[in-house]
Amino acid sequence: MPPRILLIEDDVSAGAAFEKVLRKAGYEVLSVSRGEEGLAAAVRQQFDLVLTDFKLPGVSGLELISKLRASQPRLPIIMMTAHGTTETAIQATKLGAYEYLVKPFEVDELLDLVASVVEQSRLMTEEVELGESHSAPRALVGNSRVMQSIYKQIGRIAATPVTVLIRGETGTGKELVARAIYQHSERADKPFIAINCAAIPETLLESELFGHERGAFTGAQSQRIGRFEQASGGTIFLDEIGDLPQNTQSKLLRVLQERHIQRLGGNELLAVDVRVLAATHCDIETAIREKEFREDLFYRLNGVVIQIPPLRERREDIPSLVEFFIQRDAHALGVESPSIQSDALSLLGDQFWPGNVRELENAVRQALLLARPFAINPEHVKQVLAQGRKAVSVLGAGYSNYVRDLLSRVQRGEEQDAYARVIADLEPELFTQAFRLAQGNQGRAARWLGVTRLKLREKLRQLGLHQ
Ligand SMILES: Nc1ncnc2c1ncn2[C@@H]1O[C@H](COP(=O)(O)OP(=O)(O)OP(=O)(O)O)[C@@H](O)[C@H]1O
Ligand SMILES: [Mg+2]
Image (tube, rainbow, N blue to C red; front, side):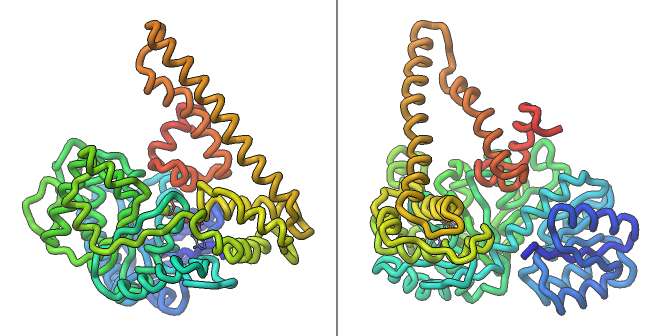
């Protein structure tokens, strides 16, 4: 189902223009011109996002936001304001608007923001089921002993306000677990705000988390409300917490200890009531030993730890995961009666799966496509696995030759800054491929790469892939 947007704009031609752009980008749009109509529609129907003008006849923008926030606390709101009205925009974020856009804005800016807010909304509203499920698009599947104990743990801690640290290799389902905790918590009807600490540039991260006052640093032209303040009463999910810069670690520790935040450049202590969930794939113990991660922060986060074991340590989950992915993806891939032969299934069970459930998920999808319209057999699986291995081994051999070469050139003084050289050599390929694979969807490509959209766009521009 395409995401649904409620558009409230009294200027008919502007409204029509936004609607067209959004529809073209694949959204379903209900467009109304008055605040009252918007409020009524938001109660009657389900939306993923409200995009509203600030200046409206009748119910004003601010009133609209506080009413929406009261009746639908999980519905994200983007407010559009005219140039020079930042004060109201800030007022709006305090009342619960998730973001604001200053008119006039570029279409790209609108679409990027809408995409990221819709993603936030999806995290909040798309239910994660626990245990066997063959109907939900998102579920934590697997009946191994450890997964069962994880479901129990989620049940036990969800309703308590404790901070939870979710640990596990890449692709093991950390984000799903965070969402399940939120959905089973007493705060399930309040906002859930997810922040990928690794994807936000170091210089912007603190302001993103805690906000800033006007003039707090060069470029801080107006006040900004941070995510902690916005999540008030709700839950914040700090993903990739192992990547938090040292300075920010200290500030976060203070917030967790004192339950207060201070905007950058501000003196006021603001009480925040936010439940913190964090996740990391990093080896934090080593990071602590190397003084890269604060031990005291680790112990603060460490109150409850959910450790998700890698897939290779719970192979008994593989059949139900495969079955789940087959049933879920077949429809979208146009496969009518999807199935898998038992020897193909046991072949999948024998693999090492360094990329865990995500890797298995991709392999199943490819095998379905290869086999279509027949059952997946061992040959299909071998072919998919061989493709994956080829990519890795070619790179593997290529890599070490490349590095040896580079380092010997550095030794001979023919080259310097080896680190920068490697980055410069690989970056174009990485960005180009990710952009193509995401079929031009910048938000998705940025997420895959773990960089901000801004960074992605800058790189694409350098590569001539974006104006
Ligand atoms: N137990 C599970 N049952 C069903 N799907 C799962 C399970 N675990 C993970 N997945 C799926 O695998 C993919 C990766 O999961 P998720 O993003 O939660 O992992 P992660 O641990 O946050 O990974 P990363 O460290 O890369 O951020 C998602 O598509 C998710 O739906
Ligand atoms: Mg994740």
